[in-house]
Image (cartoon, rainbow, N blue to C red; front, side):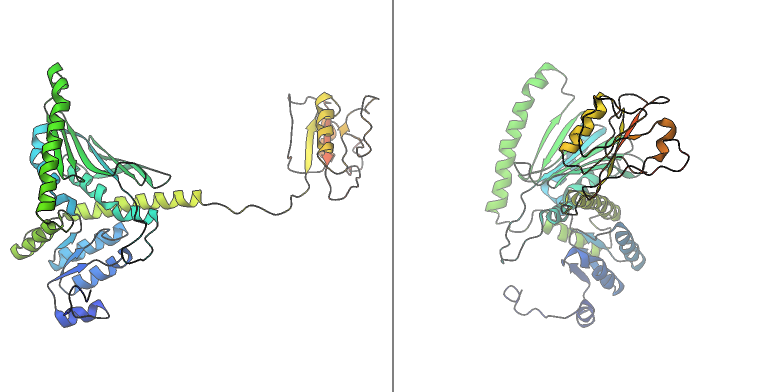
Length: 413
């Protein structure tokens, strides 16, 4: 900062600077978590306030600041500079030509910053997404503003890996879609308006606008539409690049225009170039999307493996001495289960395998309450057992010993 403005005064806190300088306008370009407190301090000191995006982190904070500004007769402006770039201005001028607005699409894909010029560690990718998220949100909200009665509602939000956001927005009978991606290529930023008489595409990467005016239903219109778009892309991109590079533009497009409009509104006593509703709704929508991203990140976070030793459990079998019961008991013993016992209504015959680790106990439906109570970990079942059907219980114990299940007196088993 000293290299840029050697004579700039430095202060430890904002109240000290306000008391010493008594400025008329305060620009807040600190980290987002500090915006709300600093903006309130400046407004309470009687200053107009410009706040870089994200304006604040919570919708309630945004509404409180806007209400405070209105009560003090001060203007508040957010860093929504795309609203005042050439593509937005041209799209607003063309808007009546496409008839009644039907759908709005806002799309933003970008490459994350992997290193900063000063060598500091960049923000995590998800935090970078939240930092740029206001841009595609506020242009979409501005396009819907005044197009239909009622509030603009965030109908649905879906997030996915890694850093992908899809949202559905509605205002009256008009729908809007928001797509933000960290991986989609090429890098794009556009707003597409679809009406009953054509489409408008505002391209913020190239600084151009393409339009197809008319219903596009005839054969000739369908045939020549690609050529119209191609001509507009070539001529518009050439003009935009010449303006940007030959004109020596160094700041973000639209930012100088936004500052000029904000200062002009202060001098003229007119409304801020960014409406309070656009600011408040942008913060509210970004807050909800941020919550969805945080929930997804928590669900996707790797969990440590459970290294606790497995506890011995019981296995309940139906048809204990039948074909399936014998096969299941044999598999459990072969898998290393400790001594166990099957149960049956009748003593098994000679076909019962003579495993030394297995003894049997008699049990039937009328006496199955005598089996040890436990949550079954395996229950093969072919049919619902009827009266007198056999039940087998296999008990796993920590030691290689076994005793039959205890049977209450008088149970008859």
